[in-house]
Length: 282
Image (cartoon, rainbow, N blue to C red; front, top):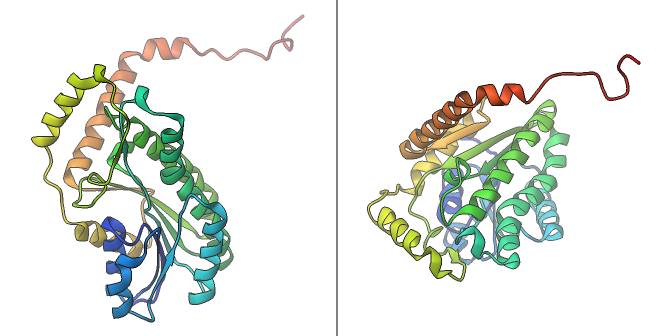
């Protein structure tokens, strides 16, 4: 058995809970952080020396740094950091208030940024570690009613690509994980904007599609995949979880490439290297 130390945000429910259980089953130690850690009480009782449950609101930057300091003081190091905390705000782009838009980005994007900033000096100093950013199928493209959620995940992925390049020379790995559908409370606990009636027909069509749609999977399968990922000596920058999201990723990529190819002449005509203004021949 291994003895890695994990730091998992959003650890008390859904995928975060499954990741925590998977790490404990592997013999690792876990710092499980969440706004409400009471659902972790049973696991803490079963693993009193290997699970440290710490209350944390990841949107509070100073609190994030304090909790990371406490985690390292307790367990001595960090090996796997899973930025899993997040929520889904649904609504058409036009409907979002400023407060709602900022709340979505604060949790899904800035929360992961604060955790990444807090743990990176620790991982850099020890010359090892793996940051796992839990993204979403929503980062593959924008979809009606999930535009701000997708925006938060697109931002997370852009950040994470840069972070991976910056951290690599210090022996720190970064992986973006894009899960498909799992039986969690992401959708049942989603927050909705005040609806504008002009979008009622689109909402009705979306509701029909969702009613006919996906059959979700057990979070345990995502946890199994995550264990395979962190056990790898050469983890990828990106990992898709689920056949549906895998097929969708390829479909979206092909359609984008077809569009780019169709407009290639316009794209190439928009660029022609010339000397900087004022530096050419007199």
